[in-house]
Image 1 (cartoon, helix red, strand yellow):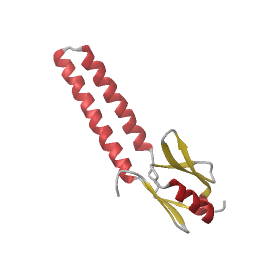
Image 2 (cartoon, helix red, strand yellow):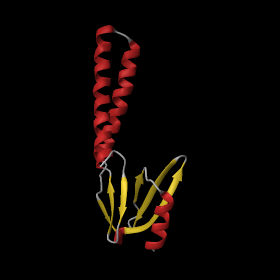
Image 3 (cartoon, helix red, strand yellow):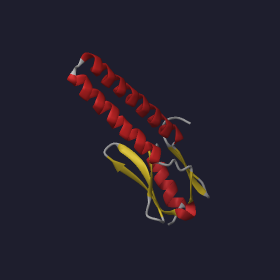
Image 4 (tube, helix red, strand yellow):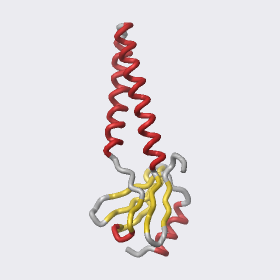
Length: 128
């Protein structure tokens, strides 16, 4: 399993493998938060205002990303009886799969390949 997310569509469930992306984002945000903290501490020694604001910006921004990622869930499987619709969408150069659930929540799978084949497979095998 790589860093990118991918989808398996079978007769019973839709699997979203995004644990690699989740762990990668947590790791990098944690490292940038530590770096921002070290820059702020270095500012205390040198008295440079640029280092203070740069370190605060880097540290707080990635601390926010880290906190938001902790509240996200990585859902391994979605049962087909919970699915309301499946659509392949494109915004700018990004192609992703939107899975709308019956409780009106949306699960988004990003970085998908072969969207034309996926659209044909969804149209021929799933009728919601």
